[in-house]
Image 1 (cartoon, helix red, strand yellow):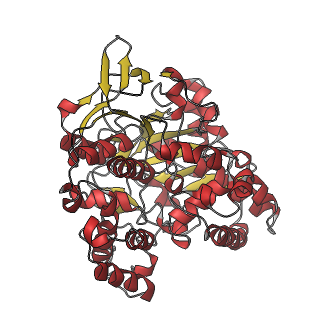
Image 2 (cartoon, helix red, strand yellow):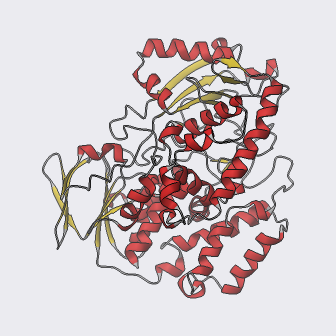
Image 3 (spheres, one colour):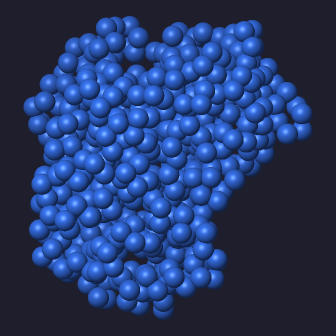
Length: 535
């Protein structure tokens, strides 16, 4: 649900600054209130986190009062609240608990966050990554468009993503606002192969807003950290999002549009989505704030910097690249990892962070429970360098949506400097249609993308340059896009994923229902697991 900030995109933006230099940020809109309330709930925030209780009370009072602050100050408060998760913060780091050796499988965001926090608390860590780079499903390109960054994987960040904000503050990373579409005409939308009129788009928007408000109300009672403990969790989990949509009092067109958005956003068909899974996302994202604050930033210079900064802090001597783990064994006394060459490593605990779609390539002893098969969705991206913002010649915005082969199209280099003049369009497809792209012969795929994009943006064929197809479904170390729980999986799998199995522990966006599918989910899960291991 890409309800983006209304920010002009005429010039690049600095961190936390609106285009016109003024602040349009209301603190009550920011997604740090829930985290602050968790700080209070811990009982001893002034001891555990060096955060005075009176200060947290003051922040909560600000949040509830709709007082207007600068965006920079608001984000600093959000990052401070989120730092409760991070053992690497000064207050937590003083309580060092060394001696344990933890082996971490995967150097994506979750594995690196977990390693960083454990190392900061005095543990010995070793990280094993099959790829020859860090970052997992986050890959920032600097060579597709000269002088600009284009994201090949995870792209959009939220002002309601507390762990992202905390690490950005810690490592000095800056954000760029994702601009809202400013054009003479609304973004084109196609449903069932038919282009909707402006009137139809306006009419269905109100219906979809009401549907989302209903989901928000349903989410208020959800436990964001353990949604399986929510009253009525089993029934909510068994219900599919498709069932929920079918019962809404909305037009058939709005129903189809809503289903297409949920399918694309969550990367699986709505019939295969747990309704409790969606409620968990909404609750974790701050209820009303989830809908318009979850996808509002990119990291200046590339999201992959989160991974490289974490890796630098961990140290290259502790990260084994090009080392796919093929065996994980647990005994009462130790945990053992093995790679394809037969080399073995021993430790006290193992943290598994690689996507569940790749678990089939690992021999577990003992075997994982049959119930532990988190659902992974399909997602692909198509990145195209273009001569410049050619769409403006026709008064069009650089975005589109359909329930066909192109789920979303957006401006991938928005808010970056206009000099040099090149830009990028990004096409994203999530759900069953992504498999169609992944299985299509390359020549046919290029021709089909050109046909569809020319239909949305006249002049595309003339403007296009280099292009890249990001086939995450076909990547051997991913074999999927990102996760979303199937009906019944939150209650059946959630406790296992959180508690672990003996010496085997789990982290990754698939373990974090409140931010499932997001980079925040990966970072949050890694940091949260580290805190549990240190408890």
